Image 1 (cartoon, rainbow, N blue to C red):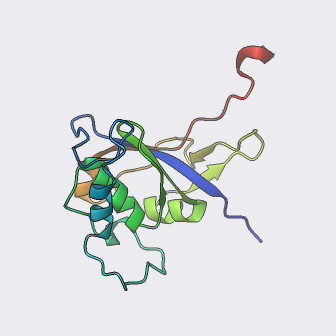
Image 2: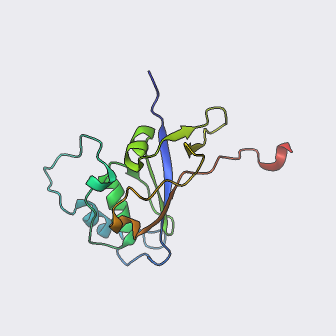
Image 3: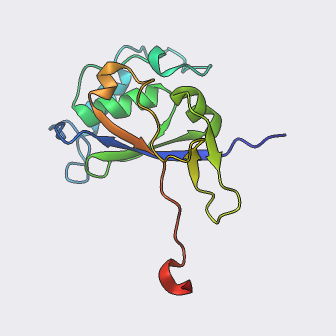
Length: 157
C-alpha cells in the first residue's frame, strides 16, 4: 500500500492586492464574515461537499470579498484545508495526491531527510500557477512548498 502523506504549501497574495476591510488577518481577526460569505457564495445549506477530486479549472472562483478572502474561499472550495492568514499569506494543506492532481505537477518527498522536504519532480519549491483560473492568478503571486527544516542550524558545522 502506497502512502499518501499530508503536504502543505504557502499561498502568497500579490503585493498590489492589499487586504480589504473584510479580510481576516492578524491585524483584523474580526474580518471572518467576509471570508465566510465568499466560501458560501453559490452554495446552498443542503448542498453536499465535493466527493471527487476536481481540477483547478472546475472550481468556481468567488467574486465577492477581498483578495485574501476570495483566494482562501477558492482553495477551500477546491478541497484544501486552509489556515489562518499571516499578513498577505496563508497556508493550504491536503494529501500529496490532491496537490498533484490539482496543480498537474508530480511531487517528491525526500524521505531521507528529517522533516521530509517536498519539491516538484524538477526540484522546485514553487507550484505552477498555470492550472489556476485567470481570476485566481490575478490574486495569487505564488504557491510555494515550505523549505527544508533546519533543526540544528549551524551547530553541526
